[in-house]
Image (cartoon, rainbow, N blue to C red; front, side, top):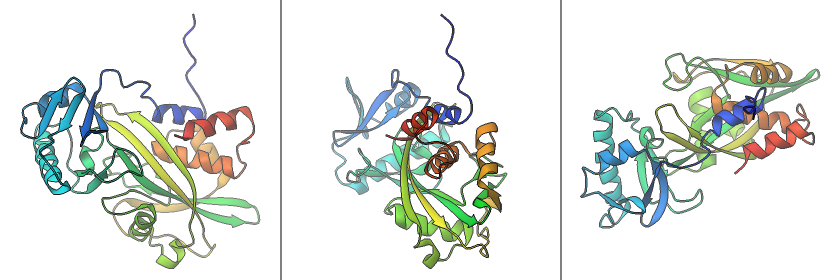
Length: 289
């Protein structure tokens, strides 16, 4: 039997972001009786040295039932994250994210962003397609990520993108990130349209899991507007014809891994990839829950 062919073109990006085909070998992590994540065995073994905060049984690992209330759970998790960072398991980001069992479920605790993949907890974020429609066709703003970024340095990105921090929803996050990253005024950001929700489950080389939900927005921008970097996240912005962006995604690996998914979704909605063809249907299926 011949081995399966390696996916090429657009599909290889979807496959790369969905490389966790089974949770076999991972240990469920629960808070308040609800599963919120997955742990690698070595990280679970490290947590075993904190029995006052973590309980082990046949079903996996759970935060101690005695830690009632978000504040006490936050403190226990923060203590663990500090120790895990010291032991080299993760890098503290000093930005808390909400922990939920389901995307729309109640907040059960808050955890430092840097620990989210290590605990296999689902995270949410926003991505904005900055679009300019010219007589010759659609153009797309791209941001070139700083070469000092910890993730995907020196790669192409959406005009705005960012994780949803604790206490904010997608719309509030978009407004925050748009001002910080690209200098988009609030009245302009308010015109953005929510157009898609993309999900993926990606196992990183260090074993951490990115179980992400991306809330995607489109914003039609005037030709005389130029985004300006307002922090150290992006070096510069460039406006490209949509066909050139399509070829960049299809033929290279110079776009940040999850931004490829956002752009593939855009190509399908704009008809740059036939959404009714076999490839288009397969790509659309790969982008959803």
